[in-house]
Image 1 (cartoon, rainbow, N blue to C red):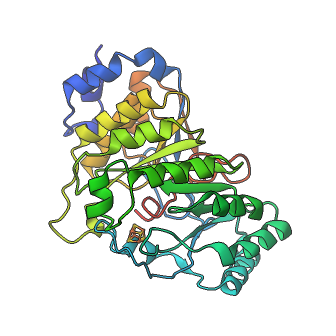
Image 2: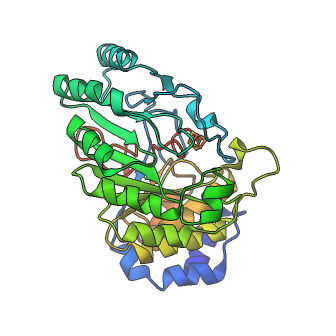
Length: 347
Ligand code: SF4
């Protein structure tokens, strides 16, 4: 039976529309896809429940912003809104105190360090790293992730020596997007240089690509995939632009089918590393179709999977398992996939 026919028999996808040519392309790779198990993560920082999978709702992996809600870039897709729900920690002392309090009160297992950028898309973490080092010394079990923005090798090495476990950055592949969406005057090469600096350390490096970042259009995604394929990253996280954060009318919602084609391209370009779908993506039927494409394209994990995800996996013969952990950090064992970047974690 064709995968199109199988999709048609899934109740949660009754009103869904798929691109038959794209589904056929995916089915043509069925043997490879069926050989890869897929992981459904329900992160702990958000209440979560579908008919098929349940969440656990504990806040054991919060995000701190070292600039509170401040950011000098004010990108068109975000307008600093991504920072708003983060816990402000604008001085090293504040970070130290808040982390220690949360360890006492809530059994904190780890945290994400983030913040707004300066005009060069850099986040000035230097003075916070001694606190990270002390916390890691006192609580070796803590998993610490950082959203790096652009940096040089010196800062990457300092993060490594402070004990940061996972470093995440958004990779942008189109100069027009850097200029127009980020209002940033730096070349695409600086994103690759940052990735090179990060992957020269022992930290686990998890780049992200925001599909549709160019006002909802597909533009530099393939170039971003090519950049990432040249470096020994731990895994790649794909998220889909959420026009919700932008000024009304400035961003289109990318079509699910375009997003599905990027999934397939990601799988082909980066065949031997984990490629994961992070939590930021449009909701509703869009999400059901997007997630179905992710499963059929052979991605390795999905955060907050939509209704129908289990049924699609079963229909096409892909083994799956559920994980009750932040998809960024698989608490208590290895550091798993990702999806806890500023672009991804507050969907
Ligand atoms: S995406 Fe990052 S750099 Fe851009 S406005 Fe949001 S917080 Fe600032």
